[in-house]
Image 1: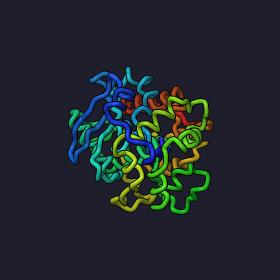
Image 2: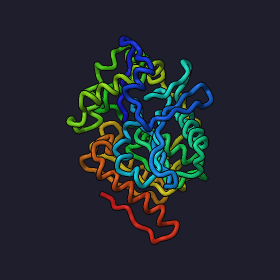
Image 3: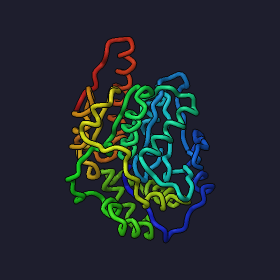
Length: 315
């Protein structure tokens, strides 16, 4: 999910309170270097192929619940809250970056004893996923990009994207967000990102707003992200060797569908699935369709190891 919900006028909500409301019986916590306490869920058969999924900016692992519900009986699915999000705790001076998120995914999976897996992500989490595939190619069985961030498009205008992203683009805007009530723009931003207003329930809005008020989250979300370690060009993605599924909603107003087409054309052998009615979070908006396409892709990876390969249909 890619809707920032930050502010300082509303007081922080203690983690104990948030965990009582938003943790589940599957919730687990792992202490990692740099003072991180990562909230994650590890669900599905232990012996099954592993899928690790990263959420988007200002979202949480809850974004993947529709896929866990539909695929968890067949696959071991690990979801996590990245630093500054959900129920993951980070030090007060933590500086968010894609490279640090990649390190969190690597440390978490190694601690869990997971050697090879499919890595996927939505929006910002998609950027984490493809960066992970580049940094650790020997550990990645497959790559799933859902309306992923990171396609190089320096000429892109922010017109039409949620107001919050325009504000995040400059220091003054970030200061405004840090000192605004997160509820002021939450509902509007979520409706724009989800595309289907029926999905933006009061419960959903409340969850986004309250998790944004976790201690330290607002500072991390509005601090700006450090520069990437590499210059990204379309040529960058030719180095990805993992089988790749690219998914996008044609009505995404946050990240244009053209970016997904860029990923699919640049990554060798990538398959593209588009959803004419999909928005920025098709895994939540169209859970049956997207989970079915993800299942077909995951099955194709197993088939490549033995049985005849099955294709992934494009829309």
